[in-house]
Image: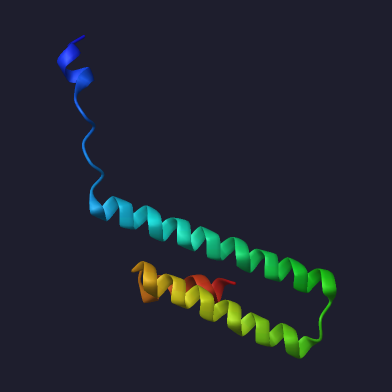
Length: 83
């Protein structure tokens, strides 16, 4: 094994990769928050109108997360419609 290779510094992470993982983590964080809200709604059996409002807010959060992540609006619409 070449000792020179082992002592070299690792290459820096490209900016696109850092952005990708930041966006991925943001989406995972938002998803877990949404799951918590949904779990609490089911547990508390809230008023139907409140559930509709919270559902709309949840969809808005999903849409905003997709837009800010640059994933694409069509994929967002497909994913939101599936839920």
